[in-house]
Image (tube, rainbow, N blue to C red; front, side, top):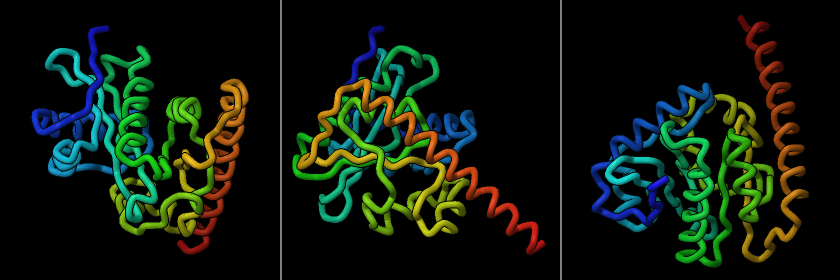
Length: 215
């Protein structure tokens, strides 16, 4: 694989629209929610040096960007995406590791977090030192959660008072690094993921029954 993973900048503006299209297409393909992003938003991340891009020559292979919350108390690695032609090659892990490296370099004292519906992403995060956490341990900045409005599951998040959703929260605290061996971390991730899925299914069932009573 001849793909290079590098920090994005203004020279990569031409990839902003393809990145947005790829994010939207991937969400539809998985049948899960993901916050929609506009090209200008992606360009801002590139301009500020808060993004990572993977390229195979001139072809877009993947992308990820950084968001800052609560005056740099929290930093999120968001929008991780890999073009389907490059999946199954370990590229997501390389992109995530590069974004993690960039985050720690620019914001060494910030807590790094993310929300995801993907078990593979959870595994990657776990290997980097993230721990599964409840949403209460993530940023409470309304702007971050309002970014989920374009997600089709936003009503689940709001009805549940932002306690949980289909996404799973993960956190890396530089003051409390995860030093557990990888096999233990992976086992815990799978266990937590199953627990979230069960809780989510129970919540959806309750909400479905409530709708039936009101209709």
